Length: 278
Image 1 (cartoon, rainbow, N blue to C red):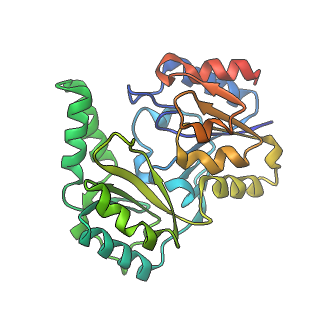
Image 2: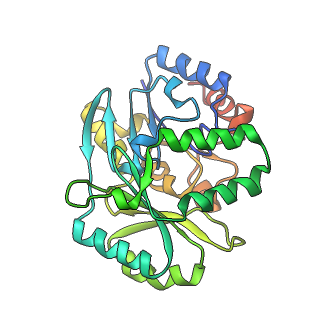
């Protein structure tokens, strides 16, 4: 019996934003063989609703890059930022014109400009593709993205903050203040004129979430397999007994891989699972 942990974007989902039918079938085959399957994502819990993820026969999930851990219908772990530190982060971001989104259990609270940024980015990537435009509109509705003005720090816990710095240098000015408390993960390339990414509380990574699930089952890390494609998967791939990494991943992550998968839209996950003889 193995415990399989799948990242979502870039791993289960390719550019189509949907899991292929063959991948769904393969995951059900693994489940029928007795393996445990978990979604292990940087997305907030409220974001695990799109791209037909509900069809994954998952035993639970790790969300917000380790901030939430759920087995069956039970949260076994929730982690929230200290409110004073969160206030300092918000102040830093506002003063340095960094767009941001606060990830909570039931909603994502966005500063003004976040939706417009992603609308423009999607338009550049997909042009006038009406179907994909509608997909992102529905995704936004399902994720319960709401204005920052509705956020109440006295009542709502935040586990992770996503950010978009349209001025790279403004963001680099504040990295020194963030690095004491957070792991800073970026997704943009050096050629982009912006920096986007997320800040994650230290000692609360995907790998920590995996360890919590393994402890919950009284299992062993030697039976874990992690699938991922970006640097917020680094600790997961590092700690799992077997690491399965995208061919398009950063070289630093690929250096940890035992197996490698191609485009998820071309059944890359299915092919590598067959290669592994699971």
